[in-house]
Length: 367
Image 1: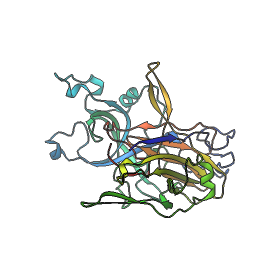
Image 2: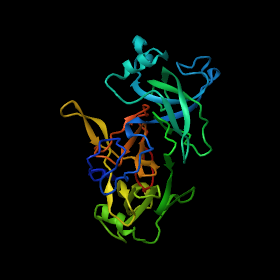
Image 3: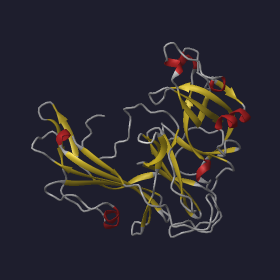
């Protein structure tokens, strides 16, 4: 299959205001109102995972993690290379697995001024947060994403996982407990996709639905179609979060052009994915996400455009405050009310080199 993908996550966030990032007053065409803010600022929000660490499962070694159930909030990660080198290379003292004081944790974070202490708001599912508390800090050696890495984490307790929490990771924020800030879950708004099937006789097949136009507001935000029925098939899926103004949207469009062969893996396809904020009737504003990449021509790191899945929306009495997004191994919290630029993804584990998000509605035929 030959697939061309375009990351259209460009353009600004919401219209600028004079308010600073994290201000209690909103601004801009889609910004929250002047209602006092209950939700935390975007830079106070982290991805977190509920872990039931069992020493017996690791042969009596937790590799630095607490042996009790807890929320692991990754504050910083380092790829691990020395442990599996031949011969093994011991990690420097500051990265040896084990507990850390808050002062030692802050020293490892360097110049970062993101909050890491105080009360903790834990969103283990939709709705209001639970109040947790930091029990301590630690460095651990883990490989949960398939590749080994060391993590500096906060050990947060006091909140059980909710019935509808994300089994892979949830959301937390350090600072005053955000009792008036609710997590709006993501639901499917529109779906126009193909049906995939497999049988021993026919192998893998793909059946396309009859053409149905995408809602006009979203179609206007997407690039112009490169082809039309019946030469190719336009598939789309639109997901949303939130009911107050504005809502957050994830739009994925794939154009599939079948070939002479019936194998869907031989079909050509082009996909475009967008995150948007605004009312369904319009106007919609495109959200820009970036991630650190390496410019191999200059040998210098830089920020590149990135695609991400909509993961939720934090809302208080003033409206939508923070958009939450993910892709494999990283998360982003996007401030919606101030003049801050678009967010860059923050890594929280090291993903396997073959892992990745599949931003396409074409047939999946492996990495």
